[in-house]
Image 1 (cartoon, helix red, strand yellow):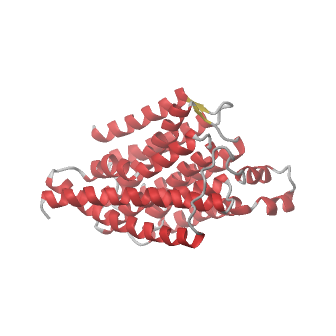
Image 2: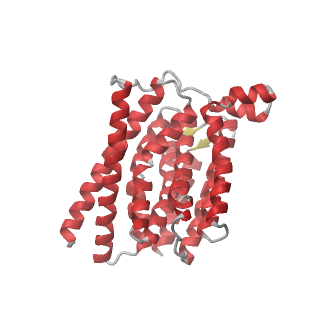
Image 3: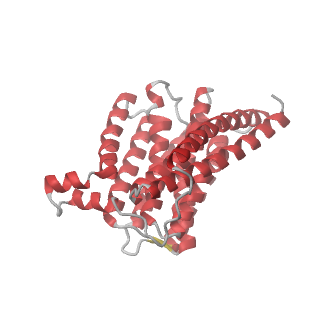
Length: 331
């Protein structure tokens, strides 16, 4: 494929993918509001929706043998999500706040899955052990989010720490900030959601093909192509939905979406594929960026854990950390 057709394919595929991901996120959010889902579950569903371009692009790159692009998309997207979703929201809204019980669980799960994925890519964990360990983290979390508060209250009573955390995860969106659900019938929403997924997958395939062709023509390294080009572009739906939640004062849904998105990237883009494909060895720079991503994750959690939440100063520092992350790749 020559340069011009590859550029046209990349631009068209990117546009179609981002539009479909945006519609997917809005429809899932509407469905969650209609069914009365708690903020944590809405954050999880929104992350699943907005994560489509990132995961699909990474998997298509992996299928084509472009391991550097695949890992770059996932690691770069995770760093970008923290800065663009939580950092930008904090700057625009003035602060990002949520209950410490909710943050404790969301943060613990997000940091744990990031650490497991990083250990796998570094060769410190086998694929099977990484999958089992991740399952031990994700399954209890999903049970709590979907409605484990009643079970825990029955087992341990309302004063147990896990019971309080589960109750915090059941927090509903504030009436003043919740968007009106779609007027479409539920089965119509579900059909459109399935269509959105198909469009996202098809668009991601075209986008990766075009990007790989252009990268080869213009001599762009796989790492730069993945981390600094595809990662931010495919993360735009996450950034848009995250900032919308932040401006509405829905800190629990925002943080839930950000950390669930990063967990989904590591789980669906690294841990599960590693059971079928052996990832190529990482460069020294890639190893440093994995360490930087984990440090950004811990720093973000520490700032959110402040009594007043993350203010503008903390949000700005998170964005600066991402700029340093990107600069490291360029150097």
